[in-house]
Length: 348
Image (cartoon, rainbow, N blue to C red; front, side):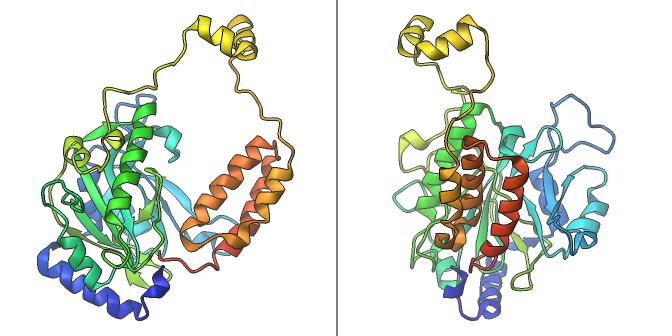
């Protein structure tokens, strides 16, 4: 974790100097134009989802002292220059993923395409960065990694961006495959005492939001800077670096194929067959689990480590659904526990 780095500002300067020696810095406004060149213009949005948009979160001073933590905003092409200055530049908390979404919600279920595959590498100093440099851009092998498009300094760690030449359409099964590919390369990228001073690898969703270039890390009061380290990439290029072939993405497998014929399903799952096929009831079936599971999970919060705070909250929401806990109760519990989790030492 970040507490492995004692003098964080000195470490930041050393990493910045090394990156600046090898690569050109890129400003935040241009950085996001490069990743999301096809965002819609203001007033252009409609029910036509052929042009999905990036969505980012930002802290608004007007919300100080309220329960509202961050605001959500669509990244529009023609207003981006002004919006960047107003909502992102020097803001103490802004987040954006590498995905574009249909509509106005930045959840994975609404994601339509992946413009960039992004990795988080925590607790990186000068020596770790030198080791990372020695592994990128070489032909696929045991410890080699693809050449990133950008490397972003997030505070005490790095965000590694691979921007695709053509955005990847996120069909249901492609999302699952992308997750496997990201996990494979995360394991390969994150090596304790080589590329990171943090022993515990942090695996993240493809929908993970990252501190935005041009904003500031509010924890260490350090600017988030980006360096152009390579060109746009293809999926085939990224696939070639996965250690296991089963973790590579096959864009032709957009949906998970059914494993059973209707006749087999009737025999194996008679209750489901009667409800869905015979009665035509296709509503999601509710879980019937006592709330003991949810209450038990609330008591586990003291075990959470820095890199797993949001994973804990995600599981909390899942258990709440399974146990049919009222939404208002879950929201109240989540805010209460989040205040506790914020005190846990973490890298970013």
